Length: 148
Image (cartoon, rainbow, N blue to C red; front, side, top):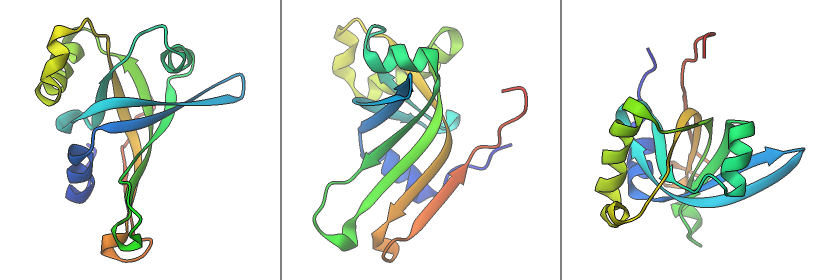
């Protein structure tokens, strides 16, 4: 069983809402921004995006993706940010039921829109938090079985 991420990582994920998602296709990288909600018990991010967007099309072909979430500040001692990697899947069935409630709680206006939800199952998180000391890093890694 995978241990939960450090509380400081979880708090940071909950206090922000914009993910920069990185995909690659034919050795060409692409980044996009997505409003996300963190799903505690699944250790992942849920967001909405149309199936025809470049990032989703690329992630469907190559579901292993990377991303970042950053606090914008000019104060060196306050710099915080997350770099992450994981696997993107379309939210369907029981997963959709679980993550939809989390997403709508965070973004209630989305109930009015026709949305396609995606779930980013996080595998690795590296958080830089200069409030803990210059360049201080916190790490989390999911235990992945050979069957995944």
